[in-house]
Length: 182
Image (cartoon, rainbow, N blue to C red; front, top):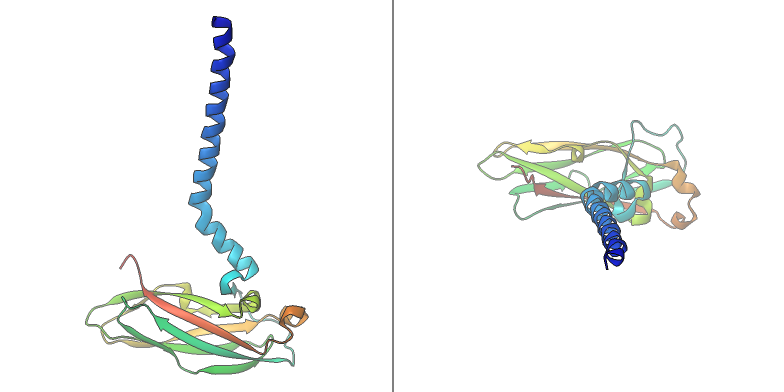
């Protein structure tokens, strides 16, 4: 009987080791999932995720795009938030600077953070931000009102993408939330 017990015990040990490694791999993927998803979105533009650039393009095309601006505020954040201008028309590759205005309507200092996306989603991978208030948290004192800049350009590679030939307009949208550590 003992001759049968040893191989059976070895099989259980191997199975336990395999299950342990599978569990460890799944836990690792869960822990890294937010980072991996963010990287995937930045590379592909999935979900309207824009790109970040150090400087504007050296190439400016004649083709123009109208960029519209949208804003929302989560109900837990007592701020007013809106674009200073509703839209701008820029040449592809040309750097543009626009502003959003935020005002803290409460009687306490509050920190907010902005999420963003671009529509149509298929254009997001070509929308490059050089500087943006959305890169960091924003803290406003009671009643404080500020203009927050966004510097951006549309990558000239957009003109080579056949899926975007009909796109003449892009919308940049932000939603402000109360910073969760506030």
